[in-house]
Image 1: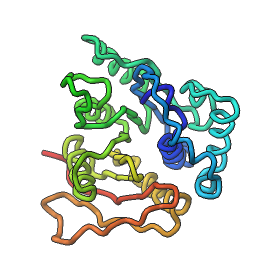
Image 2: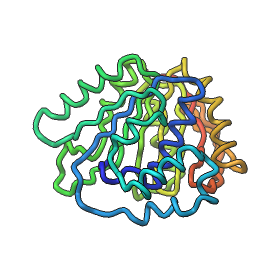
Image 3: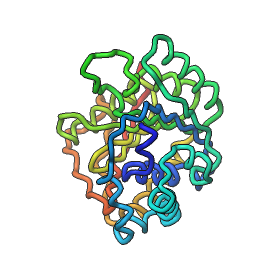
Image 4: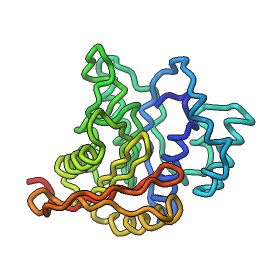
Length: 268
């Protein structure tokens, strides 16, 4: 993500999701921002939500009020503000700028593995997500996206992994199912959760010791973010999957929808 974009509507959703997932059970959180240099662009339309408290505030009043104060009143968009608050509990952060210079990426993620040792959940927040080659020049190590090996290494080290993921030009139900299955197969996670907004997808590979707590949080997410929403059909392992269509999930008022869970055996 870009430092100057801190606090837009997608940030409100991601912080709310993180707070619902980790704070009630006091899970230790690591946040890898994957920050890129400011580009001078504006994101004004993505701040309009702060003027609509009736639509958004109910899902997390504390978070909404804090963001409105910092962004609208103080006009401070530094990511350090969220890090210095208690909104994400006692989270650990990797706040450095990730560049495309040779050797920088491996050093950056080596520091992450040290910083996040012992964390229950590690959140990766790239500009785009997995698989998305958004840089037209074709830089294979672009700082704007996340690599599968970086996800797998973090999961193998013992942390559950949550990923911020943009959609691509593919039917969304099929894309969510495909990414859910691939995350499960690559990491060996027995359970993968997915959450979506109108613009982005969150993928969560759960360690077995965290699954029960995270499943309890699903109920909390449905209650807080979208009382009327339903879970989509589950995405079990391909060998066990029945020939049933995936049900469409109802869109939440604030944009967060739980797409369901994927259960399966670790990849052999």
